[in-house]
Amino acid sequence: MDIYDTFIRSIINYPIKGINFRDISLLLSNGDAFHQVIMDLNKELPSYDKWDKIIAAESRGFIFAAPLCSMNSKGLVIARKPGKLPLVGYSESYDLEYGKSTIEIPKDAIKPGDRVIIMDDLIATGGSAKAMVNLVKKAGGIPIMGLFLIELRSLQGYKKLGIPVVSIVNYGLHVGDSLQLENAKQSIGKFVEKIDENTLKVVYEDKSEELIHKNQIVSIVQIEKNGRLTYIKYRD
Image (cartoon, rainbow, N blue to C red):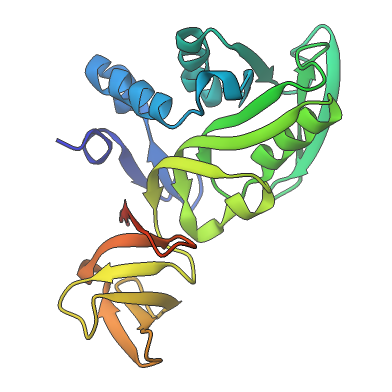
């Protein structure tokens, strides 16, 4: 059983029309599933001596960062909304789709030279995650990676951070993704355009193109500089 397919619900048109909300409530309420989530995230952490703290965004980021920090005897830095902290160290504002938001960290929570992991439950456009990167830098720390449960690939939020990003569950595609395909001209093609909700255009290494149905996608393929292929499960 894939716990993520089983326990993450997609709620259409929530909180506003056009948004496909990924609801993790059932994932959290099932003890075995929640334990597996923490274990999966823990596997992605650097070796013990390569990091010092996790900074997590209010509020769902706290859910995952706290047990990871406890398990590894590391510090947790809480990035909170304005008015929640008695002693504010640094503040950072970032753009939302409509307006702005601000997050703050406690005074002295990050020391100069601290190697800090950026964490939240989900990365979309990357605004709040980038704000946490900036807060770490303001405090003299070193942001070393982003770690997220869910990534919405089409929004490419990882590009804003300037650090390696790891996500456990990926939804959607972004232009340029290499795809492993079945019942297509070739086994690997590059996604170049969304034609409609079910049809995609891919281009192959020989420059030929083909329209495929999204059901033909087996997985997303990451091609490393040394030519090694890493496969990511495709979720729509």
